[in-house]
Image (cartoon, rainbow, N blue to C red; front, top):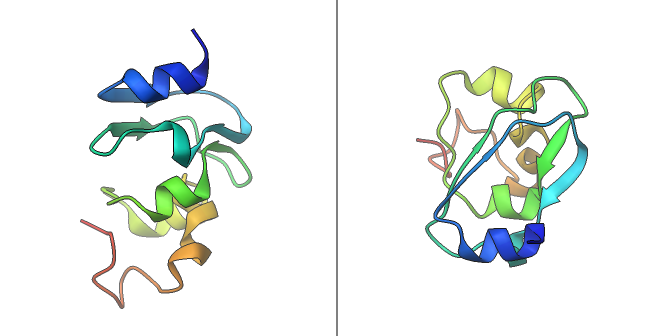
Length: 91
């Protein structure tokens, strides 16, 4: 099964990779899918398409860490606002 097929079928996706480019693209993921991207723990790592992250609601325990070394480091510019100064997608 391809990553695209998995994305289209899954209700929950957990990524724990050392990827430096997106493995999951926005167009592949159905609305309402829960994604836990845990492999992005260093600047430059990336598992999820920035457009997918930008279109999502983000849940994090450390906003500063998420926008500097987490998955949202790539989507943060797409939001065009800082999460602490805007209601945005942060929960």
